[in-house]
Image 1 (cartoon, rainbow, N blue to C red):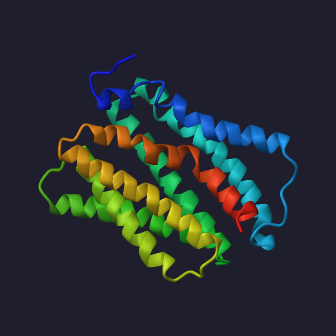
Image 2: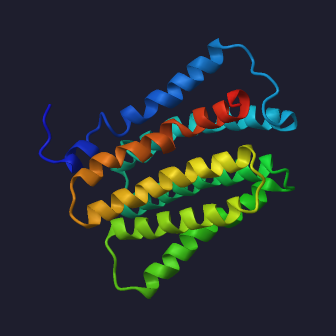
Length: 216
């Protein structure tokens, strides 16, 4: 089936949400069928990683459905609030995991700080500038997240948590690059945006699992 533009392709229902559900669903099926994993990179963190992986694999299935087809029946403010809640949850899962793997106390509470800091700074930047299109607002958020990832990763050891932060930094940097293209009027930016979407929704939990349990 042809599409008038890559923007139309990007917004097609089969692409969002359904294509985003394949990887997390496959991961959950594989976990049911496979044997229990070994000790992992940090044996003391193994129970947490098992729970985290299950929780956020399910969240990865829920997010594109709730913020996509289900949100279409909501008012614009309600749909925006729901989308923002899942954005924050998607960021929180990374910071929570990283701080827990780093052995920090109260990792969940600590994770709230960068989770809320990035959108707060993005909002302040947007208030200081002339009115921006939606894609430019996302670009501010994405850029700030990448900068924060770089700053925090420098304080961590070269271990599993640093690899997780690098992974998150990659899909946020790709989002930022795509949004630069979109703002420049390059329609192919919408096609390229499918790549970080898959990394974010579909592959984050499998990557963490691989890095923790199987990577050498």
